[in-house]
Every structure is written in structure tokens, then in C-alpha cells.
Image 1 (spheres, rainbow, N blue to C red):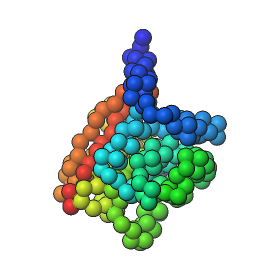
Image 2: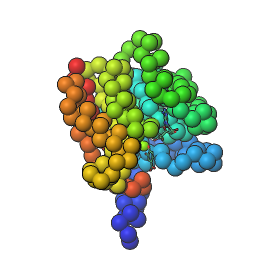
Image 3: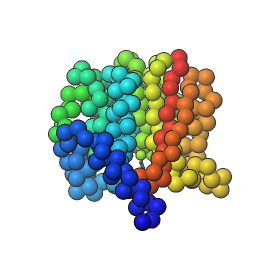
Length: 225
Ligand code: SAH
Ligand code: DHB
Ligand code: MG
């Protein structure tokens, strides 16, 4: 068995052993319909989706901001962690993605808590700040990586002490640490990591992952004040 086949098999093993709650048909259907609509197969993996959910639950999150909705797969995992009066706002550039996501989210019974806003996140974020809503407890950043430093900046503006910021795809097969790689997405992620490491209001770490999405990882940052 090749290395990546092995990662796949172990992800499946973990899913079988650990994702044992009553099967969530809405999650399966979300992937199926996203695929049928031609969306790229880049949602978080099932075990990673449950990690996001668990982080939101441990944090006791009542309000969540997501940047990068795609078909709403990670949105549903996170939305399931919310209390009945909780709120999740997810920002998506592509109207076609958002349309698929809104259907998937409604089927999951999360229409009341979840709102998908269409547009470039860097346009939606200032509008969101102008609404003066209560600070978000968790921010999941998973959109165009070139803007990651801006997204961390906005996450800081829209959260308070104790909030958790999660950044997807910080490894990209190891490209993050390859000094010869100057891909704008990689450069954006490096800048976001530098911010987490140097900002007085942030402390964080990162974990490398292997699995159905290859070799990648997450950065996790806690807002200090
Ligand atoms: N979080 C999703 C996957 C998101 S994929 C999941 O795990 O299920 C990244 C998404 O970010 C894509 O749908 C893409 O259209 C969107 N995106 C790209 N650039 C964006 C931008 N500038 N503003 C908002 N969304 C953007
Ligand atoms: C890819 C994976 C992601 O999780 C993402 O947000 C964007 C792209 C990819 O594998 O290409
Ligand atoms: Mg991602």
C-alpha cells in the first residue's frame, strides 16, 4: 500500500471507530450534492469536520464566523455545535457555491442559525464590522489563502479574549516551509503564521495532518485580549 493509500485507510478507520453517532444524512447529502453541482472536492475531511465541531463545543461557541463556505460541509459540522439560539455567518465569493451551500444547510435544519453571505470576504468583513454584533467565539478561515493575513487581522477585530481562530491548509504538502516556494497562497499563509507568532493579542500553534486530503494541516490561535 502506498503512503497516501495508507493515510486514506487510517482516516477511514478513524471515521468508522469515532464518527459513530447516528449517521448525519445531511453531511453525506451535502458532499453528494456539492459533487453533483461540480464544486471542487476540497471540503474538510469527515474527521477534520468533527475536529472543528469538537473545538467549537469545547469553546462553548455561540457565534461562529467562517470564511470560505464552498458547499457548506464544514459549515454543517460547525453549525451542529451551536446552541439553538447560536449563530454562524459564512462568507463565500462564488454565488454558485453559496446556492448549493444554502440548500445543504437548510436540509441540515440549520437555516435559522446559519447565514451565508455572498461576496469577496474582504468586502463582507467591513460590512460585518459595521453591524456591531457581539464578538465571534470561533473563526474558521478557509478561503483564498493569499488573503490569510487580512483574514487573521479581521478575525482579531471581530473577536474578543478567549476566541479561537482556526486556519486551514497551512502545510500544503510541506510547501509552507520550502524557501523556494513563492506561490502567493503559500506566501499568504506564511504571513498569517508570522502574525499569529508575533501579534501581542495572539498565541498559537499548528498541527500537520495526513488523510483523505493528503498532507496538510491546521493552525490554531487563541485570542488573548
Ligand atoms: N470550508 C469549506 C471549504 C472551502 S473551499 C469546507 O471545508 O467545506 C474555499 C472556498 O472559498 C471556495 O468556495 C471559494 O469560492 C471561496 N473563496 C475564494 N476566495 C474567496 C474570497 N475572496 N471571499 C470569500 N470566499 C472565497
Ligand atoms: C484545497 C484544499 C482546501 O482545503 C482548500 O481550502 C483549498 C484547496 C486543495 O486541495 O486544492
Ligand atoms: Mg481548506
